[in-house]
Amino acid sequence: MDLGLQGKVALVAAASQGLGRAVAEELAMEGASLILCARGEEKLKAACDWIHQRTDSPVLGVPGDLSVAADVERIVREGLDRFGRIEILVTNTGGPPAGPFENLNRADWEDATRSLLTSVLDLTRLVLPGMKERSWGRILNITSIAAKQPVENLILSNSIRAAVTGFAKTLADEVAEHGITVNNIMPGYTATERVEDLARTLAKREDVEAADIKRRWESQIPMKRLGTPKEFAALAAFLVSERASYITGSSIAVDGGWISSLF
Image (cartoon, rainbow, N blue to C red; front, side, top):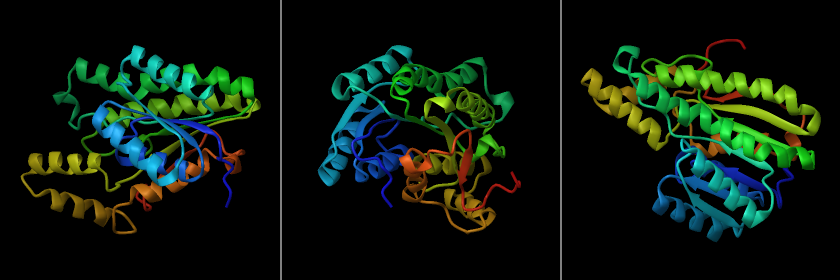
C-alpha cells in the first residue's frame, strides 16, 4: 500500500529510542523526511545516523527538552530552516513517574503537565499555521491506554494523558475543514525501555522480580504477550498518511486487546 508519505516532512518527538524511534523508522521507510528531537544528544545522533543509513531519507536531529518552551521553539525553527515546512507532527514524551497520589507533590504534577500536555500544546501551536496554509496536515499524539482505562499506580499519566485526549478531539473539530487530522494513538504494554523501567519500579514496591510483573501484564492481555514497537509504528504511519484522510478526532489503542471497554 502506498501511504503517500514520499517527500512529506515529519517532526517526531522523543525519537531516540522506544516508540518514537520506531515511528521515525517507519516514516523514513515510507520516504518521509524527518526532524527528530530528544533530550539525549548522543542517542539522538545514533538514531538519526542509523535511520539515514538504512533508508536514505533526510534526517535532522535537534536535541532539546520538550518541557522547555524555548527548546520547543528552537526544534521547530531548525526544522523549518532545513526543510521549509512541517506537514506531520508526532508528539511524544517519556512517561511521568509512577506512584500513588499521596506520594506525589505539586512539583511532580507541574513537571508532568509540562511534559505531557504543555509540550503538545506548544508543538501544535507552532506547526498548525503552516498546515492550514497548505490545507494539509497530520497531528498524531502518542498517549497511552491509561488515557482510556486508568492503570494502577500511574495517576499522573492517567490524569494528564486524558487531558491531551480532550484537547485533540476539540482541535480535530476546529481544523478538519482545513484538511488537517488530529488523532491519538494509545500504546499498551509494549517492549520498550519505559515499560522495563515501570516493571522494575513495581517489582521493587512489591518485593518481587520484574519478570513477575511482566508475566502479570501478559496474563491480562488477550494476546498473552507484550507488543512490539514495530507493530505500534505500523498504525502510526497509517494515521499520518494520505490514506487516513477521513480519520480524525479518534483515539486508537494498540494494546493486544487489553482495554476492556466497548468504546
